[in-house]
Image (tube, rainbow, N blue to C red; front, side, top):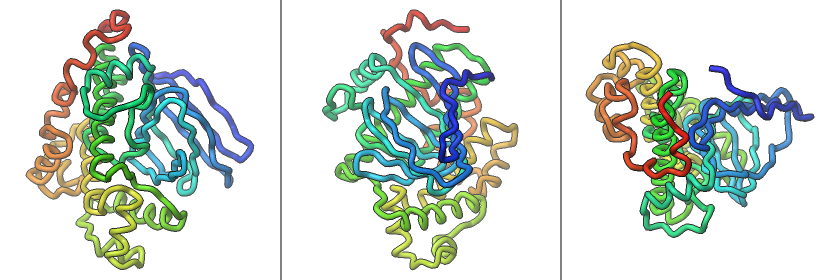
Length: 317
């Protein structure tokens, strides 16, 4: 799979950045974004020119938009409205990678009109919150996009996946906005971000083990109450919710990238047995684990691409 490098650069502060176009359909583009920090650096500043979703695959950093700073790590989703300025603070990891989905205005307006949600939006304001915590259904769709690109499937199916991701992210964002009365997890202190990132990394590393809340809070030398409150404020999930989503993230990857039996995946990912994996999968992804190996049909939202702008240019390869 050979992408096209479009914006490689070495910044004076020692940051190597690259954006690689991986695939596209009907004006929607899939990009691979990576950065490598060799020396301490200043924040990366910019302004988004299009609607974008970025699913973090590796690494952790802080993302600031407006007056809000958000801690993002593996599986988190950054939601971008056109014209928004941003600042990336590379506080935790020297290397990070994200998959970026870029949507033209005509596509997003068509998608928003088909979703028929009750949220009133100004034109160009597609997402209600700037960051979502890891969401297994979005992660599954994200991984299926990579499978579709790798297997060189038909572009119409790829477009259906890309549109379903945007619809799911918008739905999750509105649910998060309503549940929190418009308030999303916001970092106020670097110290808090650093402590929570340490906790999240501990959970990620030990997700396959029987991790308890006491294990994590003890490792961080924090009281359980203070730890849970700090973690939820920074991440938007409780530590237990984060643990389950990290196990599901691992399960999704193993289902799509290996031939391991589902029963073995349940054990390797930390669920212990198939029944626990199946219950979590149905609840958070929306289908049985085995269905994911059959392709994206169980997750795709039908009807999103009918009468799509420029759809006539898309045909099966």
